[in-house]
Image 1: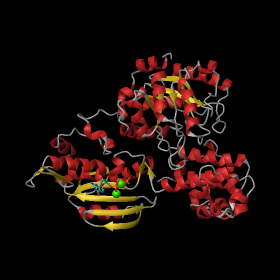
Image 2: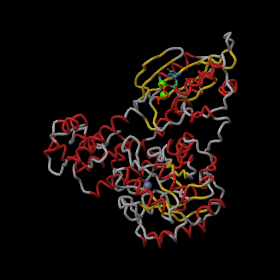
Image 3: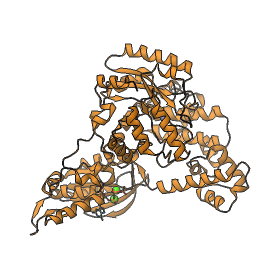
Image 4: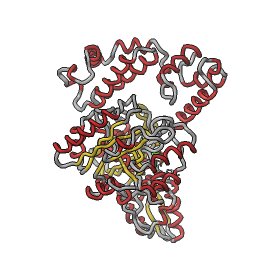
Amino acid sequence: MSANRELATLFQKFAMILEITGADGFKINAHTKVARVLEDLVEDIATVDDLKKLPGVGKSSESKIKEFLETGEISELNALLASIPSGLLDVMQVQGLGPKKIRQLWQEANVTDIPSLKEAIEDGRLETLPRMGAKTIANIADSLAFLETSSEHTRLGDAMPIAEDIVSVLAQLDGVIQIQHVGSLRRGKETIGDIDILASTTNPTLLSDTFCELESVTKVLVQGETKCSVRLDCSMQVDLRVVEDDVFGATLMYFTGSKEHNIILRERAIKQKKRLNEYGLFDADENCLESKTEREIYKNLGVPYIPPEIRKGKDELSLTETPQLIQLSDIKADLHCHTVASDGHLSIKELAEEAKRRGLHTIAVTDHSQSSVQANGLTPERLRKHIEEIRRVNEEVDGITILAGSEVDIHSDGRLDYEDELLALLDVVVASPHIALKQDSKKATARLLKAIEHPLVHIIGHPTGRVLGKRPGLDPDMPTLFAAAVNCNTAMELNANSWRLDLRDTHVHAAIELGALISINTDSHAANDFDQLRYGILTARRGWLTPESCINCFAQDALDAWLARSC
Ligand code: DGT
Ligand code: CA
Ligand code: CA
Ligand code: ZN
């Protein structure tokens, strides 16, 4: 791993501690900016000749980076870290606790980590603090509970690259015949308990030894010929199962799950006087009917092949044919992306070139609106200029259509953040909730309904505003929203960013059942954010989405016509 990531994390940490200790905003922002630049940097930071040429990197950041590259440490950060209790960084993960509150909790209530925060809530210490009402305390308690229930699971977007790295290393070993990830990861769940890998090999010893000695392994829990289990430095557990190659299909099916899906299939087999287990499908005389591939087993059971993402043990087993679920290659447009005009890292042209490289026919530039001050949202005047600039670049760049759009804030009462007159100048309007994400369900429903029914809105962006493991987001009455979306011909977004995946799988399913259109967008702020599309696709597939119900799969003409619709 290059030092970029590690350094970015350190600069982020720097910014967080500076915030807690009450440093000035300029200094905090400078560190956050460097962290972002490092995260997006494609080349290895160690190979950059002149660090000061990087945006946001001044003299002091330069010397910190150099120190780190030479010594692996930043002494100023160490000193700063020593000045606060280390557990306070965990407290920052609690949604709704800003640095100022944390500082108050620390200095006035002796809160130094998550356990002492819980204690302070339980023994009533917090109530005695100024500006700490019962409602605030209840909110903190809620966020704490949420943080706890979600912390055992890893986001799909984090688990997938880890699993793929391991699989690609092991696949190269002598003797390995088939190897792939299974379990909830193969089913594309938004969060993953542990990573499961299935392999067949002629050299099980080499495979298990290599697996248990991977650099990222911190603890070997089980090491055997057929099963190994390890813990990684990121604290995830990985299970490796090794099977005979001629039963690979049967075990693939078994370990892909879900357990509920497997149970129903087994019952089907029994009704047909057969037996299904991880070694194959057998007849009454224990002759093996099928075991090599999943497809053969489904076929023999008289069930259409069921894609892993929808193996939930629900209505997938009443399907009469395999559904043609959406695939990555079906996506031809991205309708929600940011540029340097607000909080993105790419220029309009860079964004368009990246989208073109990825085979899209259309890309929409949808920077933030004026109320999103932290995201450098555009004032009406800036938006007008931005539209002109987008039109100009669209003329300049061949091979892709660049649409002028905006990600307009939906205020807590459902009003939009720009006047209609301005919105009418745009090709595409994505309306999203960003603030007041704790309002009650009724208010949230009314708020989003108003946006859906607005004649100039095309898409509702990340409708709940949830962030996985951090905040649950809005909880509106979804069927009501979807019915309105159908009526008004407004698309509901599935934001592909793996922190969001919003709408979630079950929402997508409910939406398309009612006939609503879905829009899968990456919400890209940097070039590699486009890579997140695959997680949106997995989630969409879990929601049974087919290309016809997704506006991003429309051909250019059809998309243009849909955007120009009047309603
Ligand atoms: P996770 O790890 O909690 O996100 O979810 P999974 O689905 O990956 O569950 P895991 O890792 O416990 O097991 C992997 C697969 O193995 C699971 O999807 C189905 C299969 N499996 C595990 N235990 C059983 C079982 O007791 N019965 C059946 N039929 N299948 C099982
Ligand atoms: Ca698993
Ligand atoms: Ca497992
Ligand atoms: Zn947004």
